[in-house]
Length: 215
Length: 326
Image 1 (cartoon, rainbow over the protein chains, first blue to last red):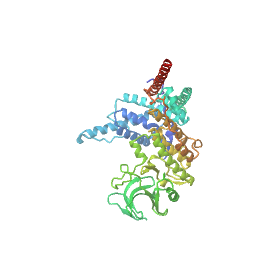
Image 2: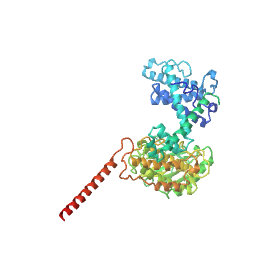
Image 3: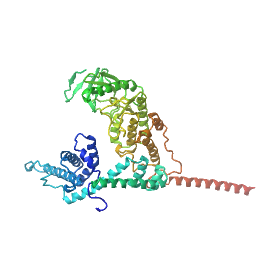
Image 4: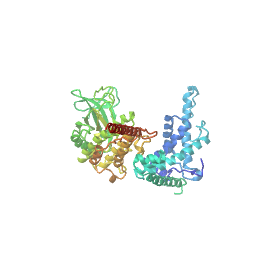
């Protein structure tokens, strides 16, 4: 994964304005927006860390709760670390918690030593090699970026155009098959691929710009 | 009306509905509960109870009651609306209720066993069959669309058209949750379901059309509403593909983000659904569409040519034979 192709900072609509709105626990729309943007990322990383579907769902829930509890403490200051890194740590700790729960349930009751640690420190059992998790996080973060960009573009283009783009570019149907199925000229397929593709790239760039915090 | 009877086996208390025994809680919504009930002559009914405590203040509770009064009269005029048979209580009490015809059971239809009854909704059907044929979509969508039209013509809107609010009575689809029906342009605090709510918000006839469009999208593609407008990667036979693509045009017109680009009204949409032209394959068209395509058309053509050749040969042979004789 080339770091030149993708930025290394928070490029999903980290949207510092969104983060500031999250300070208000009553702002349900912002919390929904935040959840919609990040849940798949956390879920995918949890699954790739070896958790089951149910455990990964718990990790999503627990991570979002951790964000809610700690968002007041988060400061957007590159010197202190990025939002992406902060969220990654929260997710990693919750993944570790899940693995620890699993270990406990497999152990004899006498061996259970619940230190009650659910904070940021004291996680003896790591989910996996931190470097591996970082790589998985990077990978999923990028995947999520594209997903978010596609979702955003989907809402702005004509539905018929998105269907053509989806079948041809994402589902990778041959152009002639798309043209035949949707009863459109094949030239239109290429034109839409170009136009919608350009919008997706532009959206990715926009998100990347936000990632650097320059907006 | 405000009396409650403690249920021996449930933690909830059972409201009182005149001439009905409330047997079992079969559903819960934001504004109230739905009970399986038996009336005084032993017929099973559904009773929805709307609680005052579910509303932050009296006005929306009263609006709900008034909307229900209007809906009750209309409900029996259209097969696509669940019949409301009785309304009890009043908007000044702790709750009011209405009695409806009971939807089919998921296994036994209208043969009701109260101990095992589970209402059959479209949402339930979709858990077993993700995708319906276009024919089934039309048979389901047209009556529901027409039923919405009746509501709209009488100044009512549904506000929460979704698979869970479409039940079946003797296999026929009907729109339920009259509790959400309200008069147009009246505000309600608790409306709609994410993904079926029009971008401009609920509360208009065109927003109901949008919700129905999303339902039709889900049942025709087998995709979750949030995937709209994506089409399935596999569409099946040529006929199924062509039908789906044509049906998709109706869905797209119902779900336009800009309400002014949607169907003007449900009559227009119902007309498109009922006038749907199913694909009729020609003799030279391939039977399948994707992947390895069938050569049935070419085989048919070769057969025709062979038959024509034999006829020409026989004619030629007969002519030669006649010439030879003369």
